[in-house]
Image (tube, rainbow, N blue to C red; front, side):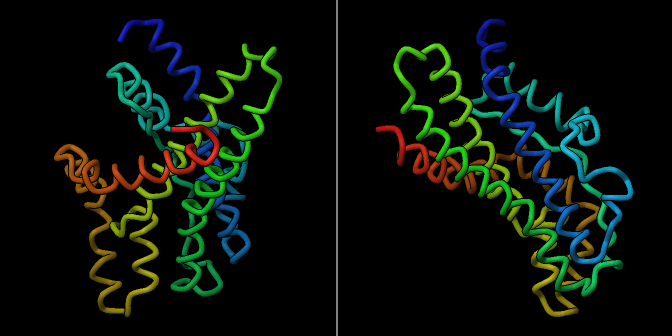
Length: 219
């Protein structure tokens, strides 16, 4: 991929990726605060200021590397918002709602992007110079938000799906699953490297994304 194509791809994907990963984390902190834990608020993480959320590796290097390699879509993550589950009103139950907040936010953003795409393509054709980049950004937003929604629902700690599973499972099983968390990131990297996640969730992500886009644009 030449440098112009890389710059063009970054210009289309940068804002949707930043909004998707930042609002995902803010949602965790906001719901935790409503349920009794103000750790994220105290640490200044319930904010849209990207500086507070940027992780050099997950927010910059991974998306940039994917763009350079010509990946069909970009992916990234922000610094996790700190949550002290012991401070929640009902730790086991409320853990589920805090974890769900991120993926649900991404789903809502994907739906909002679909609606925005429908509005963009109704603009007068004289505004073609703004219609195309906005339409591409809306489509990028749909894809990245569905990636984050579905990927994070995998029932493996420390992903949100893992925390949801820990909250739903009975005590002994929840404890056994929670013990995986220190090794969770390494397991995720290994499964990504082996292509397991791509083959399992890839069709779900692209299928749901293209279905939403297809509601607005003919495919």
